[in-house]
Length: 318
Length: 233
Image 1 (cartoon, chains in turn blue, orange):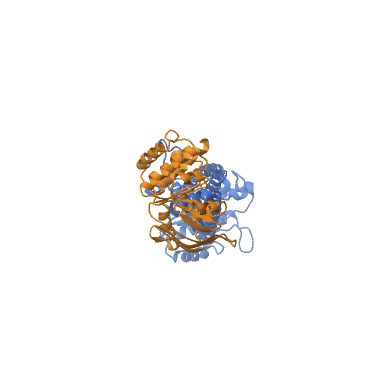
Image 2 (image 1 turned 60 degrees about the horizontal axis):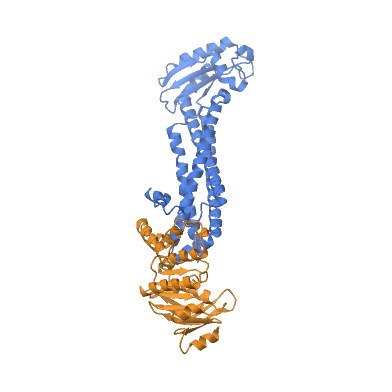
């Protein structure tokens, strides 16, 4: 931290030294604003990419906790031959299954879901609000919701056997397969976000290295003069490094602001879209704490890239 | 002591600019470097301030063989050399103060001491009231004085000046040489590249004469060698 402070410290405190920011006029020139904009854009994209990864983690966590210990028994409205099962018969079967499951100790709660609740669950797929079963005119299955405390591995098999005895078409859904697919998808998206961040960082490093090399070519005479006066490579490198760190700070601030506005806007938009099947993501302190690593990493990356590039180029000089 | 042994220099595949240059500069000596245009004066100066490396031969400075030095050691040697470039090579975005302070900042001196030293020196060269001015707002003579102040601020062991009186009238040129002589009395070895005959006549110091890449040494511009040197020009 002290080193960073030293790097950023400007020698303007003495009154007569009003012009001494850099021995090489790095902060003057057309490329300066371009580089800040470039870093800002990189930071913005990195923010979006990392935010996406964090939000995906939130979603998969919410999906997991939402489904954990919650199983469903589906009683289809048609039998294996495709004939419609009368509603009252279906309800009797459901009652029977519910009664028979009460003897299973790990089950905390067993209840038949009312038809309105089932329709509500299906509403997003039908794009219809406040519909009734009659209005939709569809043979809805009956659902029994089960809540377990700590299910032993054999419980699902035992339950399925018990259910089949009463109604062979009934099926127990522990959501495992669906959850597995979902976690696989979020894992892939995580990896994509990570790779995207790596690509952004690599592009940023290459662009910055190129920009620094062109800066060095632009100020070749001044660099040579500093060498002739006795400046070591580290002295010259520090000037470029300080310049890069200040640009990284400015770029990171711009990128962070733009990303914050974008994310708040997105959150507001998603809040208003209840039919998107997506949970609302949290932008709490932890979320921002994780994202705040990006400016630090940007500064570190810019500083190291500049140091490496300048030292390597200086070695080829006088 | 500065020693050049059989130094040869060529740029790329061109002809040799310097040919078997051989001389020794004792500590505290004062030499002029003279010769017709294109004789290799600037090349010799560049070798002296370690701006280029010779194609062949050996240079030793302050007891070290320059050919074997790494970059770090090279910087240390350069810090002992003050250079007044012919075109001054001032940093145009820095004030007079900051230009002169540059070698001290490079050597890592504290700002408080830098301020004291620079202010004293700028007063001495008559630029005490121009400290905040940028070089391009000053006259050629004033810029030259900044370049000289920058070269001497670290009290170098070797001072090299390439045509330091080029932009000055004779009176100021003599004053400047007087200043260099003061420094020389303090033990600084001085080499001044010049065409100014009057200056060499007035300040009788040995002259290194370069002619077609070869170096001759004349004790001074007077005496038995005067005829030989006059023949060169």
